[in-house]
Length: 67
Image 1 (tube, one colour):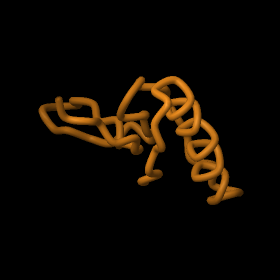
Image 2: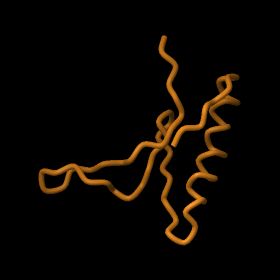
Image 3: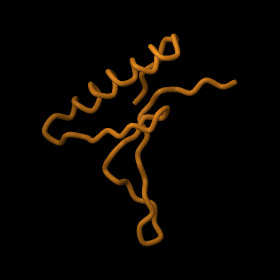
């Protein structure tokens, strides 16, 4: 079985026949949404880094953090 990597993925939506970014990201494992903070660009990375640790606790495996 292939192991999934924990990473952020851009959330896309169909609008007027085109695929556009909704302005948010989702966890590749559980789908939890994350929003960029224009006043603090590092906040998204920090929030997701903390979140990705939860997946390693659940699986008991080391998680590589990829953004």
